[in-house]
Amino acid sequence: MGGGSVLIAAAWGYPPGWRKARYRVEPPQHPSFKGARQVECTSCSSTLALIRFFRENGWDVKTVIFGVDTALNPAGFADGKEFRRSVKERYIEWFRGLVKTSDCSSESEPEVIILPGIGRHWGRQYKGAPLAIFNEALHALLKAGKPSILAVDLTHGINFQTVAVLYAAVAAAVIWKKERDLLILNSDPYPAGVRMGQCVSGEKAEESAEMPELSINDVSELQRAVRNIRQIAALRRFQMPELEDLDLTGELGQLLAYICLLANGAAGLAFRGARYDDGGAVAQLPSVEVKPPDTTPITRDEAVEYPAPDQTYAVKTAIKSVVSELENLRRDNLVDFLNAVARHYEKIYSLQNALILKQTAQEFGRVIERAKKFGLRNELTAAEVKALVELSEESINETEFRNRVESAQREIEEERARLRDAAKRAEGNLDRWLRNLFAHGGLSYILIDKVRLAGGKIVEVVYRMDLLKSLLDELMRQCGL
Image 1 (cartoon, rainbow, N blue to C red):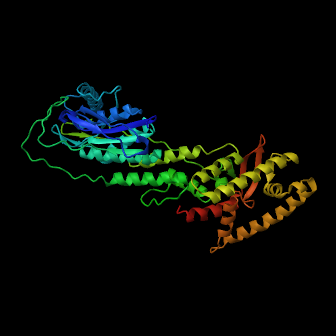
Image 2: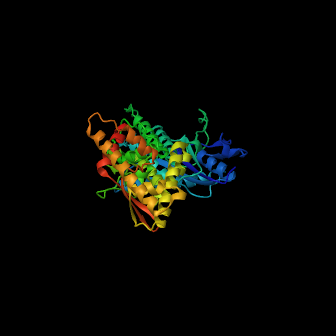
Image 3: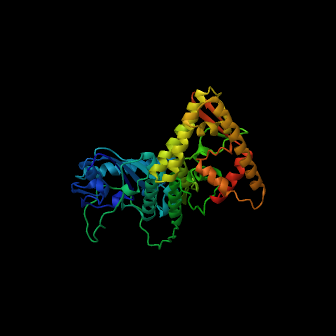
């Protein structure tokens, strides 16, 4: 129980409209709260009760409160930035006021994030978009940092805001691999007819007898955003997803091509030192730039408008998360890289690929040792690599090695000729060579031109572009790219 960190994400609407209640927080149905103590306290906000519950049960608590622009009248402000700043300050004041009028103590102030508004308020039409609200909330959660537990308090939110914050929390949990540690919390509804005192005050909107006009907002795109994030996150398990409604070019296409290699066990091609004989990289991770969402209000006489939301923000954020994890597998030498990927295969239960890669790493480790014994230069041909791998301990001598090299060279050239012939034929079936590629962890001898060593390590593998390109084209086709 306790000992970790909790991030509370709370959707707040208009605090002056809240009334006092005796909140009772019982331990959630989660293994981390086994033996936790129930907490009761009086407040106008469930968020304060949750802060107290987690703290009293030994958790480090960080709170992000999501307010909305509609909480404050935009009249009289110089521009949208000043207005947004004032809205944030008002929420901070409300938080302090709620703490003072509550026995749910709070020792630290929250991070306050203001979200765009939607609908008619204060005589103006707020033209926020659900996706913009989602993007802003997701950005704030990811910036707050990965917690042990993510707790979402939906008690006090406005309809559109609650939905967007909830979806953003789910998206963050997927990116953090924390869906099992996501708590979605909501209090009982406040009883009708009960008139307890308010805890904080605010400006009142003018009353009107005019019938309002309400638009129905389509928030389906938030579900699509979460689905896309979840499918991209699955790439961490080297699984090719179904991404029907996404552009498979650019950064995503580059990442999918990289994953296609790893998903099929051809990890050697994903080594940072894997090069074509023209110097180009065989496969590269994309460099992803994710710009923070901009929801700065644009205040006008009749409306509060906002910049158009970035339609690619969620996808790019997910891609960057996956790329960051894949970067952790990268090594400056082949053997260490193969072993790192093999360990990842074991974690995701891709055991056949793990065994193949471990064996391949051992074989190339022998190449390094035996090349040193023979005093070979820092550049080996594919035939020399094959011969060094296949030599038995009893026959490690110069004569036997040279005989093996000649034999290996003939075998390799014969197989290369067959591959060229198959690749030229329109109906040529390349599956045989793809199987060979996978069986060698992406380090098939017939495709390798040379291997370069430096400092007693393999730092570069040069591939024959005329042979590998046709195989990769076929592999990418079968991966749906």
